[in-house]
Length: 489
Image 1 (spheres, rainbow, N blue to C red):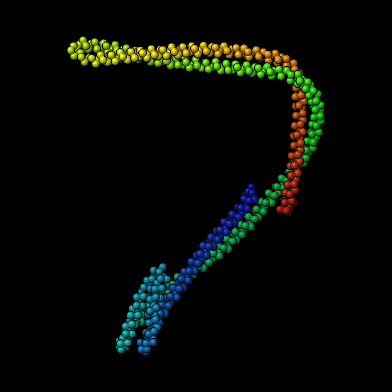
Image 2 (cartoon, rainbow, N blue to C red):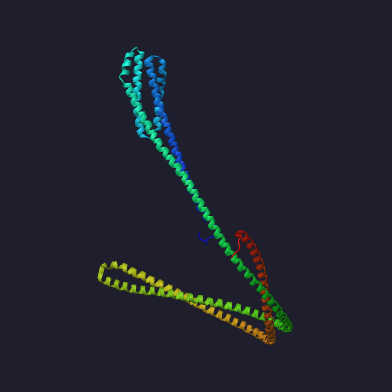
């Protein structure tokens, strides 16, 4: 068993294997008992077959005895056993054949017995008829022939063979039943012993592993005790540090009192000057706001200029396209005109067909005219756009002038602020010196307070942890003693 496993895993493994063994033993026992039940059923079945064989053999014997009594005495009372046997024999034989339906050899024997029994009953019935009809000599003759005895002997032989077969089968099934019982006993006995041995071994190993791990835990307890002593020592050191830090705080507080007075006097002068600065700053804010509005107007005007310039460029591109069309039309017109002239001169009377060419020339001329008009319109648009751009530029210039004036006023306001700031410089220097002293003193206070706070927290945490650990160690030691009941080495 792996010593690194936890208690839960070790116990679970032991129970798992034990359960597996019990399941295996139970399964084998169940199969053995089931086999035993099956074998017992077949043994009982064989006994029943033997009983039925004996019944029909006895029935034939009763029929034979009743027939002989009637043949000798002529008394009809002797025929009652005969009639009973003759009536019940088919049912008995049918039951036997059903019981041995799984045995072809027995079925064949019982078929032969049935055929002989019918022949025997027919022979007896014939002899009985002779006797009843007053011809006993004929019945005696038939009986003396030995045919009936021969049939009966054959039936007995076949019956004995069927009984012998069933006896052998009964012996075989009895042996199988005994073997199954022996296997079941062995399985239960040895399986139980194996399971018991495993449980004992698992218990021993788990107990030993438990003792070893508890011993290791006790070692950890001893280590924890040493850590507690170290923590107590740290607490003593922390107390000393707290005393020293408190002394430093007292000195630092005295320095802070003197420095605070100087800061208060300087602060009064700074407050008055700061009020003036605030007023000048408010005026400056108003002027700056106006300047921002002017600059926004300038920005809008500039945006207009940009848009119009873009429009101008777009119109120029359209003019270029129209000029390309005019050039193309001019070339085509010239070519058509030359062709029309040549054709008209060379064709004579047939030159009429060149009227179509002339018509095309006129259409192209129209296109040239229309394109020329479009060019003129585009040029007019360009001029209008240029005029608009000029006007927008002029507006932008005016806005820029207004912005310049506003920013001049802003500059004047900020010059006033600069004068006031100069006045506050000396006070600011005094405040600076006082502030430095105060910052140094405040830093010392902060460090001292931080040290005290940290030491206090560590002391509290250490004390709480020490108490908790001590309680846990006491409880753990008590539990360990009860569990192992032996000194830890």
